[in-house]
Image (cartoon, rainbow, N blue to C red; front, top):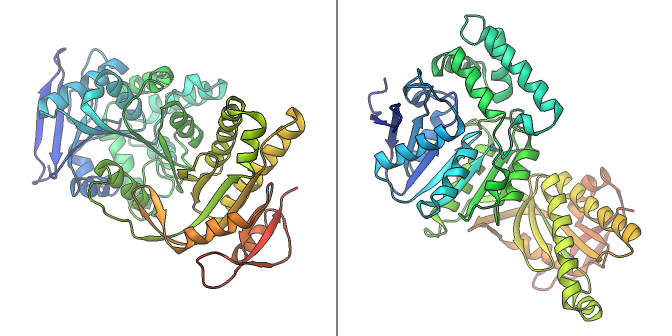
Length: 452
């Protein structure tokens, strides 16, 4: 056992002993348990150690092993969703936490949502990573087939010395891992729980459905999800964010269900969580990052309001917002600001931003043809270094993007000339032209993306 790890125990009302540990200092952050956890083994692992160290350096970080796993009781009569919520309730009460930020990873996200519904006054911030509202059995016939295959693999190979069976799960959870990380994860499966309990866990996971509960969350919520997650598809994270009122979705460029220390996505995760939980109180700014920026605006919005009236405008704007947000999520963008009739979004790559811009215009055009009307939107795309601060981006390139947007006409996509080679991979482009950008010393070269 790690010498510097203080492991404590508490007991639920139904007599289950739970192991928990608190590391670090500061405001409390509680991690709702996810399966395949082992407090001591995780503390020294090459897969979870960076999570523990980084979060403990910023918060009083509480984690625990849920019933049936790790250092908590394995021999338990009941192992269901409500039991997991009870485990969380018991642990935070034992720790004496009255109000805290709550982190839910994987199926722990559904547990965290349920807890936030039952105890809204106690949860200051809700963070959901790799989480989902509905288990596999609620995702269609393929979900049932996946479940049946995974159950058979567990029954045959979970507790044996033959790694081939468990390797299927290892490659799903951390496909980008090193051999050492894969070896550790394989051993975690054997140490964390029994074959019988692994099967019982899965039988409950696939039946989870907190779709209606998610819509009742009132806690400020941050949803982070790897775009290439093989365990919980990104679409499930996007769907979860759409259910929770005012939740913010942050797509992370990774194929791993558990982010690894070497990934840029891990550093993005940590920065987002730190900024979200500190609630801008520290005034800390993120380091400058090279990102692709996209801005949209409804052309002639004032004249349109005058023409159709306030009530119709509200309906048009709501449809417009749903359409744009849908395309942004589909192309893994992060919404930075919403200005009423426009959006400010960042993307991890120019190609993603350009594809999103073209998809927005084509969606609007399709609706215009089928329904007879859609607002005309202008779009600007630019790339450069910005500083992220309090969920917003700042810097010269933000202003340049805004000036490019103001030069665009309705239905037009204008992009910085430096992105022209990227744009050619998405659609044809027009000739180079220069625009005078107010407040910018030199003219800005741009090209039009001909999306039709």
